[in-house]
Image (cartoon, rainbow, N blue to C red):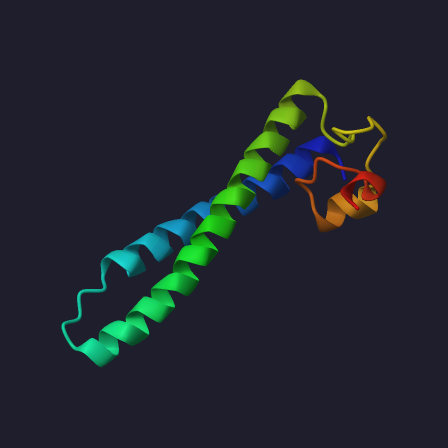
Length: 104
C-alpha cells in the first residue's frame, strides 16, 4: 500500500479511537445512580470501560508514533533491527514499529 493510503488508513483508525474514547468518557460521567445494586453493576461496567479506555489510549500513542515515522520517512522499518517490515504485517497492524521477528 502506498504511504499516502497507509497514512489515510492510520488516520481513520486514530479518529475512530478518539471518538470511542469520548463515548467511553461520556458513559463513565453519566453514572450517578443511588440504588446500591444498580451502582454495583455500573461499577463493574465502569471497570470494563476504563480498561477499554486505557487500551485505546495506548493504541492512540502507537498510531501517533507511526504517523511521526511516516512524516520522517522511517515508517515501514523495524525500530529495533532496522529491517523492512513486510507489507502483510503492516496490512494487519499498520502502526507496528517492529518486524515480525523482533515483535516476538
